[in-house]
Length: 88
Image (cartoon, rainbow, N blue to C red; front, side, top):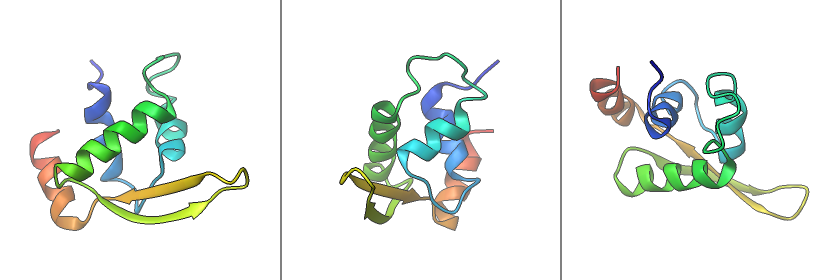
């Protein structure tokens, strides 16, 4: 049984140094093929919510080739422990 998408995003963030919404979508696509809920807008919302709840931090940002601002999020070690404690 698959995890709810928001849980999968949090769990994914414990496996990478940092990620932007596009990274999340690209890397979770294999586990959620064809799932319409897996898109950059939903991933950004999930990452921002987790940040507001103290589970992630904004790590860095850059302007992409199209002139869009892209935020990268990370889970510090203490946050990874908290996420892994509740999501197996």
